[in-house]
Image (cartoon, rainbow, N blue to C red; front, side, top):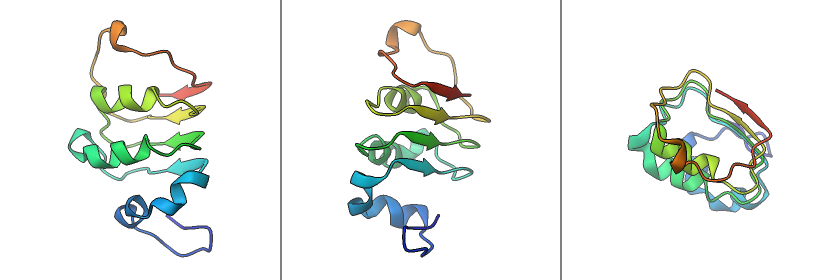
Length: 103
């Protein structure tokens, strides 16, 4: 992952550096082993107010984390391909505003 100035950041460094969050519109975290045990990472992602595009492909996102991500207000494009999402009752699904969902 690279920051605006081209410096390489580790996922943990990025998620601890909150000044990036307000202006971030697109985030790709492929193959980062994000799963339900990585709840802090998911909690931080859903707090990014300007996020419109999120690519979490090749992670192990499960039902609880996915429901939180789907409820994000400004998110338009979500990629959760090659994930391990279990089933869940449709009644748990909040209104979704996502225009493009790959999964």
